[in-house]
Amino acid sequence: MTRLLLRLIINAAALWAAAEIIPGIYFRGDGDVSIISLIIVAFIFGVVNAVIKPILAIATCPVYLLTLGLFTFVVNALMLMLTSWLAGPRFEVNGFWPAFWGSIIISIISMLLSAFLKEPDKKSD
Image (cartoon, rainbow, N blue to C red; front, side, top):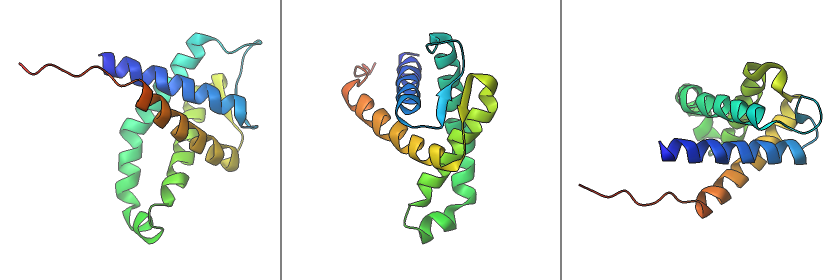
């Protein structure tokens, strides 16, 4: 449970940062981003990455091999665009290129936060 909550917080922070840095990615609403909207979008993003991304990766395995893994950036952008579509009016990504650059920002921030916010070691019983 702690791991899932930590992943949710990391995703929320990464999505917020991408929305702040990349033009074309933003949270809709009155003024500042609400924490509730941020958590909902982060949850949707996590589910999309956990369920749909592996299926898409298997289906496009030859393309991954031909591009030496660079197709990952395209798949990540598509996952961000799908998240935008599923989140409805809360979160918007305006096109492929903002999604592409946003997915790179999200990956970098998630990697950095994951490195600094390691969960405590589990005790083996």
